[in-house]
Image (spheres, rainbow, N blue to C red):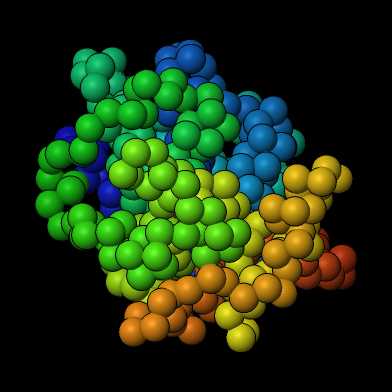
Length: 317
């Protein structure tokens, strides 16, 4: 069994580029749990809040529930669910998962493979991170799911599951930093150590893991702080190339005001003439898929009916 290939091919709901990282997040959480307790189970009622928080922080901007991946990940052969009545998932409804005592863990064959190959867990983690999230979020994600950071920081993944993976353009960083004259596009920071810039990074607007090209019209030169805030959806680029600040962000200090809140409505610095500005299609993808705008209020009349239907972010069983 090629577990890298199987994890690389997790079935996910797709619709016009909408991110659906629900299964990858649950699998990362399960791998973190396995690392701490290889024989443990994850009872849905006990981990629901933590999984929901993961989806809130690293998932799509619209409200969603961890019930869907908890049930649907079974169909990918890497996860199993049982209830107080015996093996098998009771469905994707929140109430039934709670009341039935549903508990999940990695599939038996995967647990056996992990026990036999001490490097497999790290390679699976690296594959999930590289495939679904930008590098600026990898350490935060590992900490959030309880994974050992040194284990996650292994070398490139190899194997059948990686045969068709895209290769990053190594020139991307130099192209972007040069286009923005080695200054953060949001704050103007331009520090150097000796002859080398320090604390400046090339940020993809549309994430590379989600088919964002290694091109100047999809890149920003950002300092480490603003890169992290941009990838976490605190900052965005709106119409007229104006900087957006999430209404969900809160900060009371002078530093928060100066480095984040005061950016709202400002124009980014650069790129210098002759370089393409950020393409509209990439800006709009980031606004839809990453930026934390005010979420729509759920219609309470539909809450009961919605629980019994297939979720908007997973495929049917």
